Amino acid sequence: MTRLILDRKATVAGIERRLFLRQSLSLGVLSMLTGCDISDQDDVQSVLKLMSRWNDRAQAFLFRREALAPTYGESDVVRDFRYNAFFPAADAPKLSAADYRLELSGLIEDKRPWSVERLYTLPQQSQITRHVCVEGWSMIGKWSGPRLGDFLKRVGADLSAKYVGFQCADGYYGSIDMPSAVHPQTIMAVKFADEILPVKYGYPFKVRIPTKLGFKNPKWVTTIFVTNRMPGGFWEDRGYNWFSGS
Amino acid sequence: MTASTPIETTSARDAQLHPVGRRIMHWVNALAILVMIGSGWRIYNYYPALPWHFGFPYYLTLGGDFTVTEAINNEDGLANALAWHFAAMWVLVLNFLAYLIVGVVSGHFRRDFLPVSPGAFARDFFAALRGRLGHQLGEYNAVQKVFYWGVLAAILVTILSGLSIWKPVQLKELTWLFGGYEFARVVHFFGMAAIVGFLVVHLALTALVPKTLVAMVFGRVSAPPHPKKGVLR
Image (cartoon, rainbow over the protein chains, first blue to last red):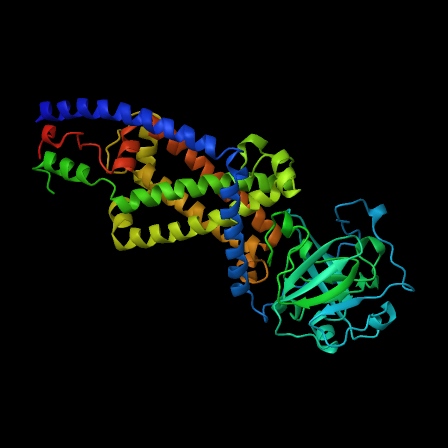
């Protein structure tokens, strides 16, 4: 019995060595593939894009209108809120209340432009919520302004359309799904920490969406449009996930 | 399988050490975990969750070459790492769930990972430290059992804390359970660290007992290349 086992062990050891070598070889190939090169191949990129579209649908499915972003106390508010854009704060567009007009287009009945003063006449809502950046940092801030959903109803937007898009004075652009646009916490923030929104945070208003990542919250908005054709977005066109919900 | 027929027992066990389903799930998991770690390290580098500042070496991270992504996407590589992370998470989670279900239903957990007691763990652990713990294919010692339970728990915690970072609004109860958004990132990091720790030991032991690798690839180590030459069949 012992001898049989020993014989077998010798055979097995022989096979093992070969297999182990072959296996180490394929492991090496695998680790080379998972290096920097694989990501840059076209077919890999298209699979990743396909998965990102799938994730858009999965997130739309997970989204619940009644799920509210957690709110915090006044003492949690960060006063010196981080400035964030793809250019230095000094280059932020300085829009003047006298000249500014919010343009409306697409599936909206009343497309007359809005002045800053008129925006201020709408009933406002305040929120203390966490701004979460796609990079991983987060900050709690206080924003106030009219609900985007109320505004869209007021101007006769087609609320059965799929997308709401934004164009901004700095060349930034973005879009969100209609359910997120009419979410009760999605506001046109005209104030930060109870003061008129400073230039660096997006004067005259920033679309504050606590159910989405930071880059889905456009600043210095000059045009709002409603459409059924996916408008994409500045960072989304650079490979970031479109829905990017929280 | 009784003690009176030791060879048949070994042979029967060797014949089907790892059923094909388990082997597929093992390798799918291995690949998914590697992608999650590689892309996760790059994501971590963009805004470290831990107070002391360190980053993972760029060449160990997954998400494309900076200069190339800059050229294709006009973006320096975070988008790519995120795309990998949120693609591989489906593979990891679905495979993990399948493994848990099969593990319970087939009796694999009960048969191979149980029973395990603190006493048995201490005994086997110190035996291992003295180099006196043998390895028998298809039979796990108490240290291995604890390690397998540990890594399963680490994967579970990492998945759940990951979900709470991904969806701090839709899954806010889960995020609350992990101590809020910021702390969930720390938990996610240490879950990853535990998995990496397991991987280091797992790979070192595989190198010491290479036939375990053969078993995980081909399901058995006793099957000879030519069936005729097989013993005890």
